[in-house]
Image 1 (cartoon, rainbow, N blue to C red):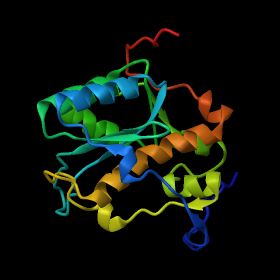
Image 2: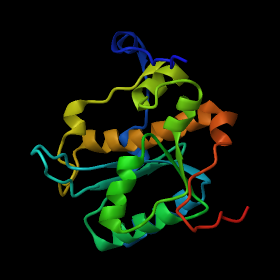
Image 3: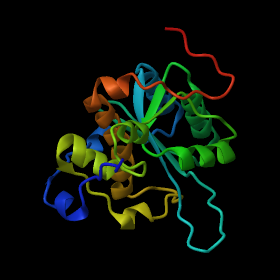
Length: 214
């Protein structure tokens, strides 16, 4: 059976833009108080949007040392963490393995591989929305831009220039912060909009980890 195809580039360019979070709704926790506030806000949720960013490699055979940034989003705000300091790494690792908190994203396999290598953890529980669209009949490689076009009839702007920027910088540029935060925010919004099919998809948990109590 032929798989469904997402809207092509020309069709997506004709759509109205998707409006994501602005800078006022994005935090970059660094000190103890900010990290504690982020923990409280995120662990109060059952599901959060999730993604990572890594400094790109341009030499054949060069292995990425990322991720350099991990981001989470609720329905109204996002938290962008730079993995440059032990306290940030500790908090992010705790969030990624916090069993009552389901992390929702797109095409997460590479993210998980990099996190396992850099942080030595097994992330979970997870919901990979790529699976939902595959079950609906779409190609398995359907990404976040196509998902926004299908679900919302909107165009998600994603600049390749930002994608391939240096995510290991000591301070991220505003455009990087917006990009990272909205990758996580959009994943959560798509999950919310998909309704029962996405909401009943069983989260993937690390091996030998029991489900969190109801």
